[in-house]
Length: 254
Image (cartoon, rainbow, N blue to C red; front, side, top):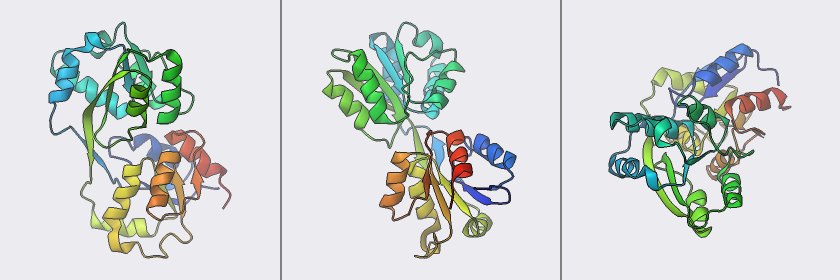
């Protein structure tokens, strides 16, 4: 699909949207920035602080997003810890290239980056390494699927899940909503972006709203969330990254 002149809604959080906005502009598209999530710290740092204090006991640390890396690292710094030193001698798993890049930016080289960036693939890759008796720490968002921790427990691991950030619905400028209603393409990069978009727009989404619109999903979990909301997904990225999503838009044939 030719993106030049197309009005594309970007629903990512403010501190995540830069790459996608830049890529769309490079392609000649007209991005409409409409953040539907805002990332904030957990309501209680206690479980995270406790985990940071017993890092020597973990064999694996599994990061499921670049945001998880950022919030966990920032909290460690507040307590006087350096992430690179904390993770020395441990196996570290990153769920995808963006998460791996965030770790490398902190001086940490992941032990494992599974080829497909979904929890099921991460679980299988970890199981293949042998999880029996291993202690695993998963710093993640407050709302997340339990496929990974439950699967690891089933494989014999001891798993601690700690919440390092939450997503909330941000305040939205009413003038931007009008632009959104007139857009051509809508992109969603997580279940939260989809759910909050519908919540924010509310009654403005008539039964015919999605007609003649293109809905693009970053991957199967987001696609599932959109379908649950009654939204028909026109395309799903083959590579579950922002670059993969933009590439899928270019390759899409309406």
